[in-house]
Image (cartoon, rainbow, N blue to C red; front, side, top):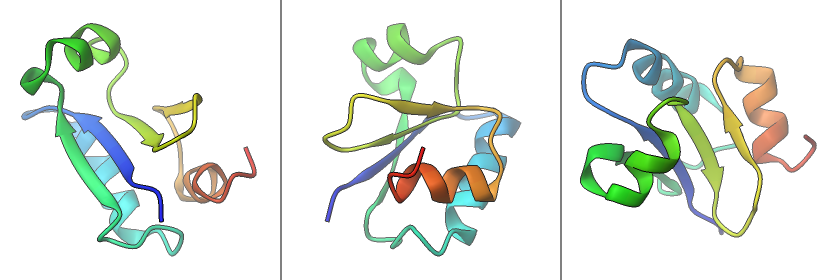
Length: 81
């Protein structure tokens, strides 16, 4: 089972909304989900500083950037994007 990464940071209300959608998603097992604060890694910070929140599925090149709704999130996670 691939990990699902949610990139965000503290104080980002859009990141909080994205996390809430992840928690509602039937396509995401909560053990798969890993929150990554972009300030913890310079590579993440440089890559995502202007685009958080961002969803990444381990092993895929494409990411899902905000804005997205629950349906779009599920389609992305299920590989139907």
